[in-house]
Length: 388
Image (cartoon, rainbow, N blue to C red; front, top):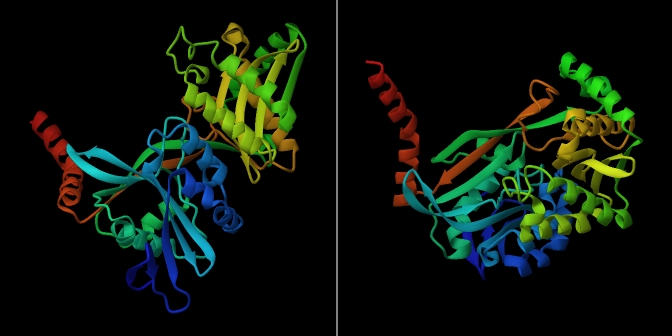
């Protein structure tokens, strides 16, 4: 892309046709100011996922982030046209026992996937290289590592990393994401265990004998508040509640505010769906979902443990799969993560999730990179000595 120059707080990346400009917006005011530019970029993406959305960033920054001014938005424009946005948080991170100044894609316990929206007709590898070259120029701050966690296979940031000619990169699998093909119910359940499906039918009949069963996929904005109340009640009623591990959403004010914010922002465009299984009018299983394009993403699931023997959570998932397969609107149902209950039962399709580090050529950055690369060798040497 050419040379990098700093002019009036912006980095200009010279190109033979139209120069690409890198600017930096800071904190909540910066994110709000980027709204129109962000929205203009979304239609250009091949797959704009829920975590690419401006609304997702607003909900995160306004509720989960503890140090809002530490978050910057590095946005590239070609002329007046936005081409990429990298949301990065300034942090201190210990890598291989070394304290490093880090820039990282923002992530929290309730943010299971990360990425940067990058226009597919741009050279994402060159943009990443220019970001790495421009970080110190654009901020005036030293850095040692660029941390890019929770990258889904096929995502823009991961493709950029895999193609970029950068010297000090580590890339490791960190998890899995699972999804169902909703072209037909047979396609969705093609990997499911036959024994599991037989048990599901048996539990279905048992639950049906207990009363009147209804399934509702609630997307109407005026009905979402009541559906969210049902979801939160069920999610806090079992092992996640105060008597259990204490991870229920309603036990953490900032987390509850995050989900209420998501519901309002995505719900206004009918992109939030709260799916409920009701027995005689009372919800006993629930799913919290966000919709992007033709994909429904299940961020959270819950069921009333008093009905555990009837498997209401599995019943609801099967019903939602059937509804999605009948609809022309949804082509994929994503579990977002790789939940441990899915393999061996549902056996959905699997994609890898990766975590990457790009180390700067600073003394601490190089030392951490070398120490990280040596870890497998040290572990192998220890195993060899132990077996001697």
